[in-house]
Length: 208
View 1 (tube, rainbow, N blue to C red):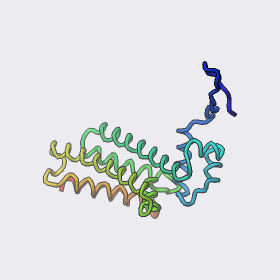
View 2 (cartoon, rainbow, N blue to C red; view 1 turned 45 degrees about the horizontal axis):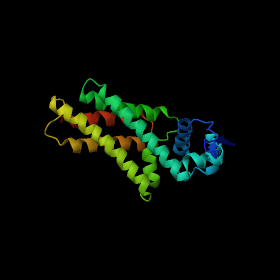
View 3 (cartoon, rainbow, N blue to C red; view 1 turned 120 degrees about the vertical axis):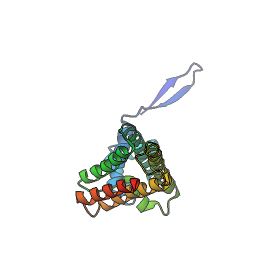
View 4 (tube, one colour; view 1 turned 120 degrees about the horizontal axis):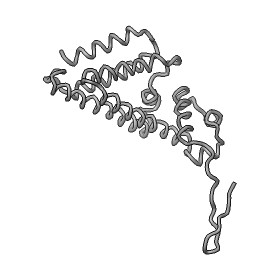
């Protein structure tokens, strides 16, 4: 409904009715829908039904399907980055920080009964090769994780925990690819020992 608010000039200002939904909560629902069904598998009707808002409200607030998808990915990226900072800053040592991060990845993957993998990795597999906006956001997210690993690795090298001869960027990229590999592998196996072997070997590479 549109209300008219009088101005001092005697004119009228159109005031749109305030939203009766929480945008952040709707965005969380959108992430779940896209994560579960993929971009191409999620229709506008799926979004209307799943988000619990009208089609007009969806367009007015978030734009079209692709714009909503990008906002969902961006929201996921911000949450992911914040979590990374907290996890690595609270660890007692560099190796603990890396171990905790890898173990958390596995825990989250195995606790998901639907075995959806990683929302960002899934987006890259589905759209990264032909959607420049998605590709750019995924690259930014991977760079964020890489820089987190580089920072932790350098700290570990300074304290003698990690082999100082090795290139921290190369090690970070190895760990980054390890995370991505586990996020894809969970779609075909939920064997915890499989993932524990990967973590143990990855940590060995840091000190060898």
